[in-house]
Length: 334
Ligand SMILES: Nc1ncnc2c1ncn2[C@@H]1O[C@H](COP(=O)(O)OP(=O)(O)O)[C@@H](O)[C@H]1O
Ligand SMILES: [Mg+2]
Image (cartoon, rainbow, N blue to C red):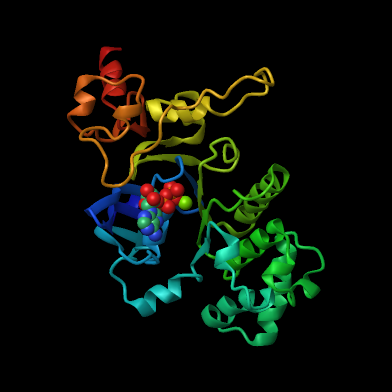
């Protein structure tokens, strides 16, 4: 093994996920390569329907019925999550990998007290006694900023506000001091003030615990100060990946540029329309031949309808890659 592989906590290669539909098999995640280094935070962005959640669920082998991994590997700490036994995977899931699901209303158990839901992974993964798990649960609720944690342990999810439930989900994700936290749009349902609080909380915990984070979102602006690198997903493929500052300074793929242009700036007049990308992502199984973004792309050329562009490094930045023929051509001309 060379040093770069040792540094990699999560290393996903050629991950391909298919869904069975009445019209046949459709690819929803199309040969994704991703990695997360130890201590690093990766942002995964893209519009709704781009395959962000299915990518992460497939890592944990939690895909819904009729959706399955067709190809690819996903190494966590040197072991392939796709081929390890169910028993081994259960030890990783909720233990060394903490997961915060997209929707706290459906992922918290409505008939189980919040305290018991936090204690469960501690008793299962860390073999704590009930009493120790309870103490740790109080500590975790305090850590995620829930006031009166002792009383909250006794609450049922419906007795908490949306923001508090989301914090409970994060507490569960963090319970076992994971090496990797995967958070799938953990703040989407919340108002902006609470979103910012939760981002700050994760930053603080990351520094304290030294964990790696994958933060999935459709909101590039929210994660600007949180992540080290960003992978931009479109139609189940990575179309651009770069260190966060580099991505903001030099967004290259027309899709990324569109996403950034739809972030309103303070300098915009209050009533100005958001300049966003026209159209919607293709449905699985209805993708045109060639670049999946071609039908919506303002820079589209003939070749884009014919071939699928590969992720290629940009000139002068080995860790900034984009999958776009037009970008590649402009680089060659420069
Ligand atoms: N349970 C499901 N059944 C059928 N199609 C699904 C299911 N889950 C996701 N999909 C489809 O797969 C694609 C990717 O979904 P998803 O990973 O949830 O996207 P994202 O998280 O980026 O919004 C979408 O087109 C979505 O409609
Ligand atoms: Mg999702």
